[in-house]
Image (cartoon, rainbow, N blue to C red):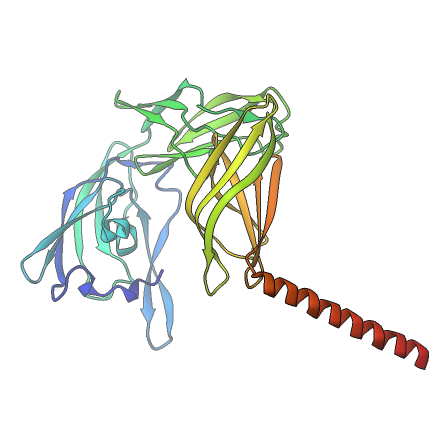
Length: 356
């Protein structure tokens, strides 16, 4: 986290932040048993020793999702930044530039003073604003599954998916949220109000039964859910088209990749993936995207200039192809050079045998 590289001038040219104000408080309160699990300690940089020193001052990190700050600048202008999924650079960097800390022990039913301040890594005058935050020992009262996932999960595969499943989150204050599991890199996770909803199974799960026992968790509440498992219907996958280029690091930049997947009933579908990168020669394949809620993994190998290997894996089916974009002359030249090399090696080998 190299925030010392973020100077004050990053907000606007020739204008530096001089103060901050709380425009909106975080969406939720401080939850005992969730937010007070870990204590953090204020660190100070000792230039003489060239190391970070623990000051002994502790704090809890307070929730910040939904918060809005007004940053007042030296030229009289201001900027609103948020900790959410906004599309501004500094909204996305909120947690890196600012921290929201509580320097006291929260008590259920009470309030605490939360301090929003620039981090120790901030290069410039420290900015700080405070507000009060409620403390509760119960925030989420219950979790209900309203509908099953849109896609099936299969026996024998850990890659289960909850995409499309609808949950009702009932809060202790009698309000509720309806949440749909959205496409996510991990089909067993989703995000609601900046917090992860997770679905975990037992570590020794074999994925061989008719159901998969899952524990759904969100903040301070959990619920059990049995996910139906089906027989895997996929029998084949084939790479049918692709368009990519390689860079100076031999990484693959795909503008498109088309695969055809076939099921045991004879039906098939073509799926196109757009705009993703693969590090050439990596032993571990990367997820290029999803088919029916399950990840397609791709691996690329750089053999030589104009010669590449591409392989894809989806559940239990895979396909691979080699791309040889050399000219006919280059191909003939390589065969001739290989023939000459083999011929000379054999001549040398036979001569050595006769000599000894």
